Structure formats: structure tokens, C-alpha cells
Image (cartoon, rainbow, N blue to C red; front, side, top):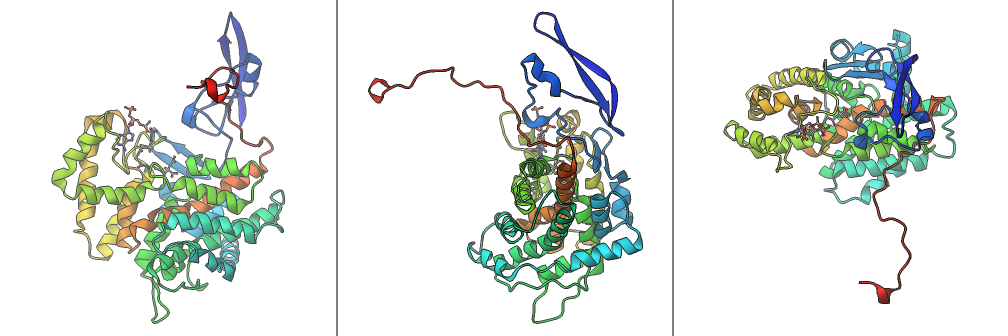
Length: 431
Ligand code: SDX
């Protein structure tokens, strides 16, 4: 970042404080408020809508223009030309890999896809109908018990092996969650398959017969992982950074990120979109739900619409819609009523003054659920798939935070509005 003058804060009886302004490569400048303490005041920004928590070189979003870049490369170009392994290398290392680098990276991941055999015992503690995200939080968190003593987060090589283990094992664990739910035996990973094909294999193969993943569906799934890989300082990434800022075990930090992602306002939205489309049921009911979304007295929100940063179309939603077409055509489902309902809901919403005035556009979650359902992935697994794609982003952001000389343990302040000092009262005098 580079200095770009200052902002002057005047306060109290004519006092003022100079606050440095910094510029990044692109995007909004920031005001450094670290010296604000001298004023005896804090900033107040619930939800951190106007607060940069760090400087980062990983992902850039321009919400007004609807742009998303991973290490400077537009998401549309990566979705079209790269695959998820290449995107993982790019995010983690900052540059697109050469052929040799990519081969070594992918081979290293493949050598860590199996989980410790004792990890399977953790599943037995869950009910068969436990939500996959509850299981993911528990089992990924449990990895911290298997990889703790030999791990020093200040050692770059240890951080790299943790990144490899997480990237390699999260698909295996996610597939195990599905298999446990369905009562099917766990399938061992197959290292002759690509990352995306291996996940579909572990999800849908059985020991009784050969399973050959459909290349069109594999390509679509691989693209979905790319679209979900990273997204600046979103709620789950900020959770991983905050947990990591205390020096916690990286596997435990990723489990915290999975927990944050689960919420329907965040990664849980893809599951909520499908449930909402099923509740709407028919195009004739769309108006009723749009009216509820507009009603200030109704907490109802149209899932898959709106975004904290994007005030234009989420570029991932456009790629996801195209992927939807490809998958449904490949499967002969182009007349899928759910997809047609989604297209109609998008058209109506984008013409409605409320959505136009509040700049509410479809986000990445609006179409992802329809694609995942067409791939045979159950609704309850949708957010687990989001976590699968986002793991590389969480690890990259965690690694950047640990390596950042400016980083300290995160410790936001508050505006206290509770009772003033008062003395304890014996029970006889209460009430
Ligand atoms: C993800 O941060 C990330 O980057 C997240 C993510 C990632 O990759 O990590 O992009 C993934 O989480 C995408 C978002 C998925 N969530 C949903 O689709 C759930 C539905 N959307 C909303 O709950 C909402 O839009 C949020 C949570 C996403 C954003 O909430 P904000 O910041 O409160 O939205 P806003 O400030 O832009 O809202 C402006 C207005 C508000 O009304 P007013 O208070 O101004 O009267 O629009 C309203 C909101 O009430 N609004 C909606 C709405 N979303 C916002 N009204 C109806 N339906 C909606 N979906």
C-alpha cells in the first residue's frame, strides 16, 4: 500500500487529529484510524460495513462494477480457462503454475487425500440424519487433534503441509458426511482421478460396480469450486482470520470458518434458495413472495438475492447460470421446472423497483443450488460443497494473515450502553 495524504478529524472543542490515507493497487482508499486512541474515542461500525480489517493481495471485488479478481485474474477468465487445481495454486502461490509446478502441486495433494482411519470413529457419534455442516465442523475440527504437536504456525513449511492436508482431506470428509447420512460405505479416494472427479466418485460410487464420472458434470463441478474459492473478507473468512490471529491450530480455524459459512445469510443461502423455490412452487406465486420480500414488517428475504458488497450482478451468478444450462442440457433436464422458475423469478425481481432501487441482484448462491441438485447432490450437502470450494480461500487468507508483520490478535472494541456502576444488593432488598 502507498501513502496518499491524510484525513483530518475535528472533534470536541476545535481539536483535530490527522489520520493517514493509504491507496492500494485499485479500489477505495483507506483511512488509518490506529492513532484514534489519542482522541479517547473509537470508531463505530457494526458489521464492519466500512472497515478494512487488513491489507490483502489475494482477491479483489468491485461491488459497483460487479468485478471479481483472484490475484488479478477476472473470475470469468479463470472459470473459462483454468481448472480448480490451477486456481488453488494461483491463490496459494500468487502466480499461475507452470506445467511442472502444477503437476507437482496436484501430486502432492493426491498423496494426502486419505484421512486417519480413526477419524471414521467421529462419524459414529452423530445421528445418521445429522446436518452435514454439523458433521463437517466436528470432523474438520477433529483434524486438529491429529495434527497439532508437530505443527508450528510460524514455520512456513508447516503451514504449507497444513494447507495441503486441508485441501486434500476436506473433499474426503465432505463425501464421508453424505455417505454417513445415506448409510452407504465410505469410498476411499482415487488418486487417478482429478480433484472434482474424485469428489463425485467418493459421493456416488459404490464398491459393487464401476463408476465413471461424466466429464461434462465433472467440468461443471470443477467450475463451481473455482467460483466459490475466495471472496475477500467475507464473514467466514474473517472468522478464520480472527481465530487464526490468536495462534490457534489451523484445522480448528477452518472448522470455525465452516461454522460461520453455515448461516443462511452466508453460505447456507444455496440450500435456502432451493427450499424457497420449492415453497414458491409455481411462477404464479412469485408475486406473493416478491411482495413479502418488499414488506418492511416481514423479515422474509428472497434467498440468493442481495449482497453486502455487490450492488451489481455477482459475476459468479452469471457463470453459474451458464453452467446450469450446460448441466441441465447434458442431463436432458432443460425443462427443469425449478430452473425455469428460477429464471422467471430472476427476471421479475430484476424488473421490480424495490430490487432495482436497493441494487439487489442474484448472487453466487442463486443458481448454484439448481446445478448441484442436477448433479445429484442433496440439498443438505449444498453448503458443504461451498465449504469444499472455499477451503483454499480460507487457508490462503489465514496464511497471509500469519505472514503479515502488521497482524496482531484481533480485538474489536465496543460502545458500552449497559448499566452505570452500582453496588451489590442483598436478596432481601431486591424486587
Ligand atoms: C454469500 O460476503 C460475501 O462475500 C459472501 C459471499 C461469499 O462468497 O463469501 O458472497 C457468499 O454469502 C452470498 C450472500 C448469500 N445470502 C443470501 O442470498 C441471503 C439473502 N440475502 C440477504 O440476506 C442479504 O442480501 C445479505 C445478507 C447478503 C446482505 O445483507 P445486507 O448487507 O443487510 O444487505 P444490504 O445492506 O445491501 O440491504 C439493503 C436493503 C435492506 O433493506 P433496508 O434496510 O435498506 O430497507 O435491501 C434489503 C435489506 O433489508 N435486502 C433484501 C435482501 N437483501 C437485502 N430484501 C429482500 N430480499 C433480499 N434478499
